[in-house]
Length: 572
Image (cartoon, rainbow, N blue to C red):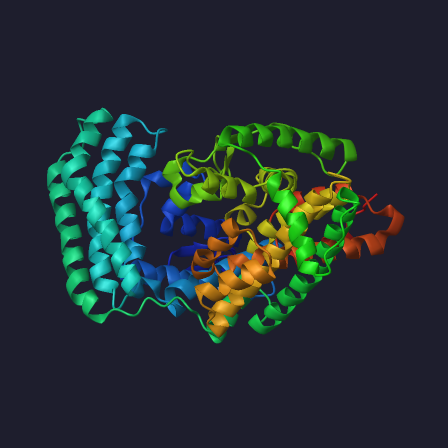
């Protein structure tokens, strides 16, 4: 009996079962069950055999599980690495916020429609599955579509107009696919033999989607909210606190960001004066600081690619040069194997093709290739429009941004962090770390001599630094003081000197991800402070390579956690 009692004390009953001694493993297990599509996107391929259940009962159980996790984490003797425990706490808080405070399952049709739309298509894309497995999954997903549609009708109370509009688009697209294209897809994928009752399941799934469409256009449409995405100061502060895991307020953030804008413009003026004086020794300097900066920026934008082909070749050369420089300067330990692919973004990517993106390898993907998709523009557009586009992605800008995106920025950091023994850090990274690290890496490499003597490359870095502060500042101003799109565009181009290509794309990001926009400035600032502190603490014993390696190997954790880590690490 004594032994039984001892074992029992190691376990805590929860709605989803029992906690073991490893809270992290328990949480990941239940998170994968509740968010199988997210788990699959992160490379956890067994999750393909599950799909989301958004019935009210399941949501209540998941909410209760997160609340009990938070209670357990608050215990002084919770058996988990303290940093992992902090990240787990932030994650559990975000889930409670989503399902309890914001109650998104009652206010968002798209919560269901996006899952419904992707249910079948994701099976066809799973090229690692056997045909027999795909056949079974197609039938399972038809059932999942039916259940999701029922859950939506049961749970939804009131949605916004834009949510309703986009949700109906999803449902209409999926309904057309099921009725017109599914059979063709099955045949083209060699899946003529599927489960018993396929057509009955298909008929029921189509009927359930149509019923949800009818419910949406009648019941929901009568009671929609105006599609206002402005948070307001109180809600912004609440979300900022959750995102940063700190007591930072919107007012303080705006003050800090505005001060940074003013500081960086001063630095840009100094660099621009130096460049104009050296490049045009016989030319009189304008008296106006802004005119001086604009002269230098104009020269920077003239040094631009002429086509996507030229741009791609230039980037491949840049990547090789960055690797060589980091190795020569002993800045950080380079990864052993290159898993990077650089290509031009496809026009099928839509608006994303205009700014480019890094498709990072999922942390648990067995084939961890990262693809850098470079910005592109159709050559069929007017010549001047193409010239203006490439001016925004000028070569001095790219000589700086290669540090941010690749070495030792995103690509290198994410590749190294994949090897961390802490899965919590890979699954639920501290958001400010990711963009903060890439931003910080720019200055570290530039200070080490990258593009030494090239004022325009450093000017491009300062312009990016200015853009980062502008992102944070305008995020606050829109959501807390109701700046409109015109105000954002005017301030971003005239005060923060953003390239038009970047200023135009800012509004959508402010609406869709206001917290993430703060991470560039906040993370870069925190890493810069950390480096300064360590240099002052260690003096001549400071080792940049060990500093950089330590930060990347630890994984994406709250930046303030590095202070005690470094105090216990010998940098020599």
